[in-house]
Image (cartoon, rainbow, N blue to C red):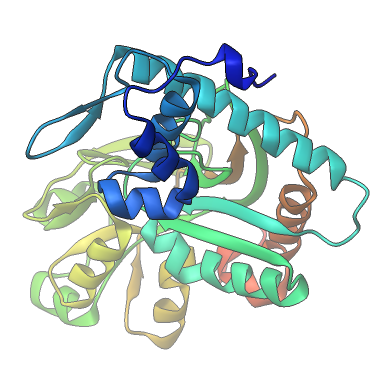
Length: 315
């Protein structure tokens, strides 16, 4: 409950106080040159006449003091409560609306997620999707992200995950590279090739499987990257062999621009998951978007997600 006027401490500078009262938050942001959250903290601080200073300013930056950090934590709780209430009140609304913040890798976002998002907002005009495509693991809570599409073998057990599809990979290279360096016909031949690797998946070892048996193959090369899109472009330029997801390379394999290597072997499969922090008071837009992604990724329009080379369709 907001205190009565006679219960609040009087500001030390009444004219400044009244000026702040008249300004909108946006105007206060422009006037003070701070973030919206910092502006909200400072306006609330002044309104209630709290003597401690929430912000520490230097000529180069604005940062929160100890009391400001405490206030920020409370503000975030208040925002979360407000969002939960909004979701609860909208739960009976058949048409999803509002904003959903979604993150994914750059390669998957560009190749598949962007198309799915376009289809979702076309079906639900009142919905708005904010996409964050990054090459790192996003902290959903700290960065206020509602949903992550992650490709992984295992998901953090503290998060809720819904499996949407399977991510398969193949070894591939260009015909020009293979003509110059030869085509490997056995896993041990990879040691003599320039193998381009991903920072997080198979950087030094590739796992190959055949007839129920697994083989670890040591690989190395002169290019390593943290994004599959970069490796793909290097492979297309004839730089070497890479392990790449079929959702990226299926069209290039079909066209002959890339050649699959060691097709009698399979590689580790990963799950494509929709990941979120909590089921509590899940808004309608989240539920509808999850169902829509599952529907999309199972449709023929997204067949490259489940693409298998000829001869492996039933394996």
